[in-house]
Length: 206
Image (tube, rainbow, N blue to C red; front, top):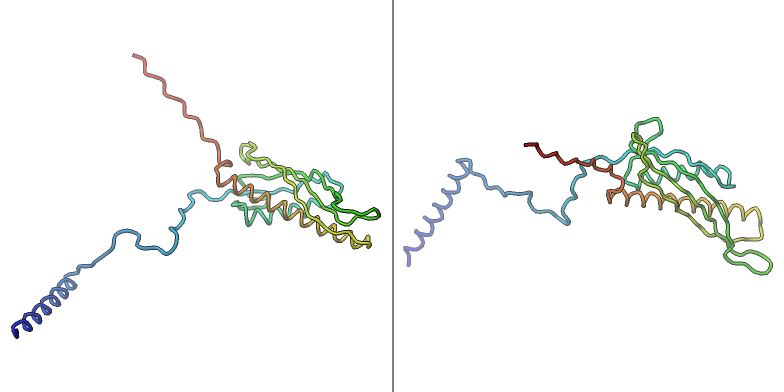
């Protein structure tokens, strides 16, 4: 029974010496591959940079004055943050150009009594076109409507303030909607340049 203890000690010393020998000879243990990750796998890097877009001032065909400047600013802000594109000034080189028109601004009545209007809605309709800078080819067109409701009071001046706020809100909704639609088109490849058709080679004559 006592002979097992020396054997165990000798085995331990042998294993320790083997480990030191391997470490001294420069052996290293490595794990092949990228190793474990926490959560989902990292997204594949995009090989192409985001398109550079110029957003020109909208043409105002409505009765609302100075609306084109506000709506254009909303578009530039929303496209900068939520369209997948890089918005650049008109003086810089760009891949795409966005232009459009404010077609109409309407204020329909939602609820009323026999003597007064209780609630109204501001509706703005905008049509935009996106074309390639180099080829002038139209790659996307869209017509959208933004709307926002407001209550009507007995104070006419305050009603105008409420109407202006609803108009601004409708413009923001409209710009956000357009940026989201543009992003969907971009991610689905609808805005990609059409692939050149490859002509089949002619058979060699005998």
